[in-house]
Structure formats: structure tokens, C-alpha cells
Amino acid sequence: MESKGARRLENEPDHEQTTGKSFIDKLKIIGPGAIVAASFIGPGTVTTATRAGASFGYALLWAVLFSIITTIILQEMTARLGIITKEGLGEAIREQFAHPVIKFSMIWLVAISITVGCAAYIGGDLLGTSLGITSITNLSDRLVAPIIGIIILFFGLSGSYKLIEKLMVGLIVIMGITFITTMIVVKPDLGEMFSGAFIPTIPIGSIIMVIALVGTTVVPYNFFIQASTVSERWSGPEGLKESRMDTVISIGFGGLITAAILITSSAVMKGMTVESAADLSLQLEPVLGNWASVFMSVGLFAAGLSSATASPLGAAITLASLFKWKGGMKNKWFKVVFASIVIIGIIISATGFEPLDVLLFAQALNGILLPIISILILIVMNNKKRLGKYVNSVKLNVIGGIVALVCTGLGVYSLVDAIQALFG
Figure 1 (cartoon, one colour):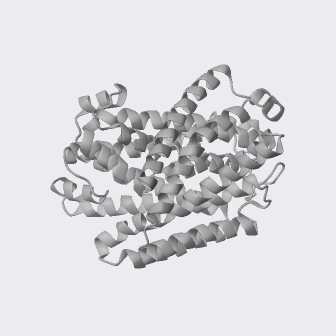
Figure 2 (tube, helix red, strand yellow):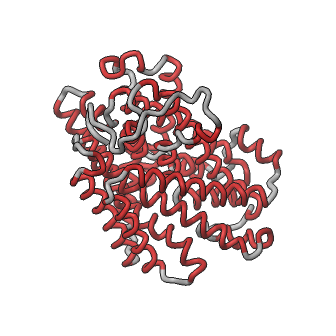
Figure 3 (cartoon, one colour):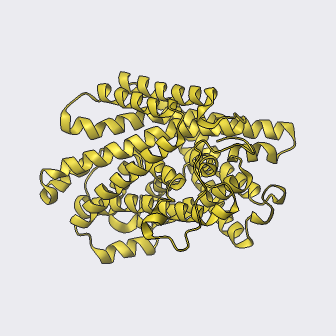
């Protein structure tokens, strides 16, 4: 979160290499990667995975697997950038281009796209979080959602990275226990499950769902979050191994949660129409009885809270990195951005305002941003002046290039879809 040479926010010692550590000790490296995983498993992901399973069974599991591999590859690059340079992705992008017009354009395109996107989506995230409570208490979501927003505001204004990290790790554990246990209980067809995961197919009418599954996982602001937060945990190249483990384990676990939701939906809802992720609890009642609503309420609450916390965090970290604000989460402008995004979410959730045009505009901006960010990451990760021997290998560049092409296709489709919706 801080510029080059900045100190970590929490004065904790560097972690040793994982060699010789117990399994429990190795789990203690989990941190920045868990924030990313908890970020992308929000109400949108839960609903998308539920709809994918209900509409196409296990056939789109491969899309979840692909999106997780894509996320791991790009997030590993940004984590390596943060550890080696002690700078965020925004600072690297800012300093990559000497031409003032190009530099200005890149800075403001990224800043506006991510800020508008986070502001547009947080209202939905807060309402999604409230579903976990309102479904079992009958309280109004317009009352519960703003209260949750105020709690999130407290976490952000505390100025403690460690507090948010612990919150996110806890939420992803809760989601894992909830959704993976549910998947096991419904006893899915293992043959169809593995076929759907490893034999890519695109059933008729599923292309939009495939894009949605990838789009809810590969989130642009998560690149900025991880690049900035890894320096809170690791201070030099000796931390790269642990950082990779954190990225692979955390994001892989997040992908398993998404897959579990899709698998559960495939097993109990195939062929049904899904209005929201809450519909899944009704179909689980024959299996889980009265516990069905409890399981889904807990899972939705954790998913919503993690995503609603990540939105303002992502916007604040991105702007702090792009404009070189010092002081990390304790910087006053960081807090202003974080608070502003949360307050917008509170207003949206309290009034029931559905900013469709704003959401579509944010979708269009992200449609432009996703391929640009993925390409910029590749450019930055090949800058030897910045990274020295830690630049991308040829193998990583080939894989990253394929990922960038897919992101470009996803972005173009998302952009066209948004434009058609705006002017159609």
C-alpha cells in the first residue's frame, strides 16, 4: 500500500521459509491470497455458480477451473512485483510509461474504472450480505444492509491491515465449511463432476454463463490489492516461495468453494429457474431439513461481507498506489476513499435505489479495463530495470499471453453487452 521503501504497517518479523515447518505452521502464511479469494466469492459469484449448475449441470465446472488457474497466474505475478519492488501495481504502471499523455491516460482510466465499479457494486454486496440475516430473522434488508456497511466502515477506518486480513481469512473459512460440507452431503455424481471439470464443453446458450463465471473470479482491483498487501507479510525475495503457496492455496480454496456451489446446484436444482442464490436453500431442505436455511444464510452472509469489504478496500488501494499516497491504510486520503465507497453503498442499500445505468457503465468500463490490466501486468513483469532476475520466464509469458487474450475476449464481450443494454 505504500510507495517504494515504505515500512510494513504491522511490525511483525519476516516469516521463515516453509521447510521443516509443521502443517499448521505452514497455514500461518495464509494472508494476502485469502483477501483476494474472499473478495471474489461474493453474492454475485454465489448466484452465478448456482445458476450455472441449475441450467447446465456439471458441464461448466471447467470454466471455474480455468478462471482459478487464470487468477492464480496473474495474482502470482502481481504478488512477485510487490515483494521485489516494494511498490504496488499502480506505481509500476505509472512509472512504466515516460510519455506524459500515455501515463496520464493509463492512470485515470484505471482510477475511474475501478472506483466507479466498486461504488456501483457495493450496494448489491451489502444487500447480498443482509440476505444471510433477513432470511432467518425477517428483518428488513434496508435496515440490516446499512448496519453492515457501518461495521465495514469501522474496519476500514481502523487503519489496520492485520484486522482486515484476519476478517477475510475467517470469512473464507466459514464459506469453505458451509459450501463444501453442503456439497458432500448432497452426494453429487462423481463421474459427471470430473467430466465437467476436465472436458471443456459449451452447451447451447451457455457462453454468457461461461463469461460470467470467469468475470466474477478475475477481478481487476484484486491485482492491486495483492501487489500492495504482500509487503505487509514479506520483505524480500526470500518470501517469494511462501507468497506463491499463499496464492495457490488461498485462491485454489476459493475456487473449490465456487465449484462446490455449482456442484450442489447441479445435484439438487438441475433444470430449475434460479432468481437468487437464496433459492438454493429451498432445494436443500429435503437433504438438510431445517439446517438448509441456516447453512445458506451463513454462507451468503460470509460471501457478502467479504465482497463488500473488498470493494472499498480495492478502490482505496488502487488510488493509493496510482497516486503514491504514503502511510498505507493510515493515510487520510485512503480512509476518505474507503469511507466514500462504503457510504455510497449504505445509501444505495438503505433507499433501495437500483442504479442500473451506473452498473452498466461500470460493466462497460471493466470491459475495457480487464484486457488492458492483464496486458499491463505482462509489460510490467518483463521490465528488467524494475524486477531484475525476477522478470517473467518465457514459459510464464506464453501462459500469460494466452490469459491476456482470453481476458481481451471476455472484456470485449462484456463491453458490447453493456453498450447494447445502455442503448438498446
